Length: 150
Image (cartoon, rainbow, N blue to C red; front, side, top):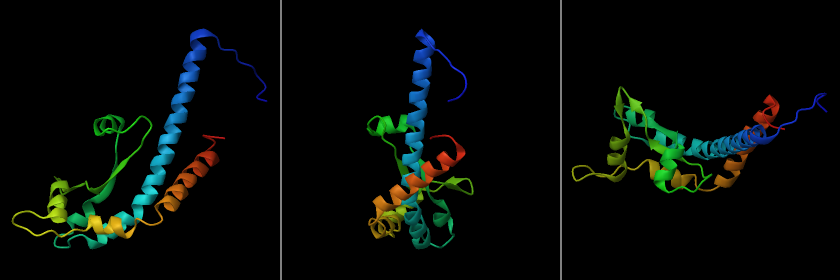
């Protein structure tokens, strides 16, 4: 035991319970996100290597973004669901590359498609559950070693 006793009543007890529930949800969300990032890593590597090489900006722009709670509710995610977005979602030389990435991926009326994200996702669709659980367990092991969870 800890060697001391604490007694909480009324509002204090409700506050501590809600803080513990929020901590549990936070750890759960971070663990799931770590699993998703493990799934995304080989996809990002393949997309970077297949991206157009003219300036190199497309390869640099490939990455992932966490989808925050507000964005998740707008996108129709259910409570507790977590998501990341893989794509050309970074600024390179002060310019956001997302639209340019869509042009390359799908083409325009003046330019034929030069897809690099879809082939990368198709190439790595096998083994996603293994990579997900490996990333999730690595995150939980790190948290246990830090003493954040028992």
